[in-house]
Image (tube, rainbow, N blue to C red; front, side, top):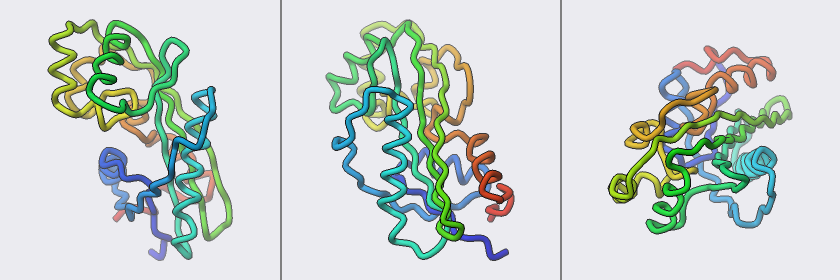
Length: 197
């Protein structure tokens, strides 16, 4: 079909799997961008900035194609949470999250190298967390899953047990809003089916 390659500037297995689920086989090229150098207090602006830096870091490695960068954080009680640093931080975080409501922000950036265009968008999904005992929190953190995810939970894993409901895009919580991706591709002049393998 001659469609440009789709490059995912992320090491996230969950994002790759989401793309594969809808027929897009991305070239995975993690950016290894140092996120600690970006200090922004507004979650939507933060994830968009980080996603853009990730995509821009990878872009020079390719002559053509679409580069997708993403970044997610959970905002709860005015605080912004990325991946927990260790087990004790994950446990402390879940003691705050359980029985509470948070907003999961994911920044999405598409750089179209062939058209020299960049789109930057953000999707927000509200997440309602279940009440949990300390024993359950410790057992969940012991699985190791919370240490690999923004917000210390994976909706596609054990974490789905502890989410009562969500308002908004389901795949956004996993790390990439598929409806938003479809819209962004359309804005760049593509049909998502162009990228089906």
